[in-house]
Image (cartoon, rainbow, N blue to C red):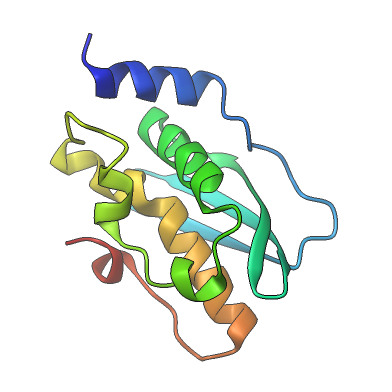
Length: 134
């Protein structure tokens, strides 16, 4: 089994941050209409630093695993660092790559988090998958 498949299976079965934060600073719901993935992200932010990130929703194995990895990795990052993340950021976790038909699922957590941060900043920006994918 490839490293990517092993990682996907492990993180989809045991996502450490799949829960709902009580009283989050912001939360946001995103949907991937191509494959019916639905994610809601919850963030706790203090002094522009992400101190807690979690998610909930109905997602594929790829979306669940990618979301869990993403969420773990952004704790202690600033809003400005996270709001610019794109597909290459998630690709670093999967050495064997993600299939082209699963690309949207692999970045749905990035998209939802960026849109949550845009809403928090009240900057009138709403990203879509074309803003995240390369």
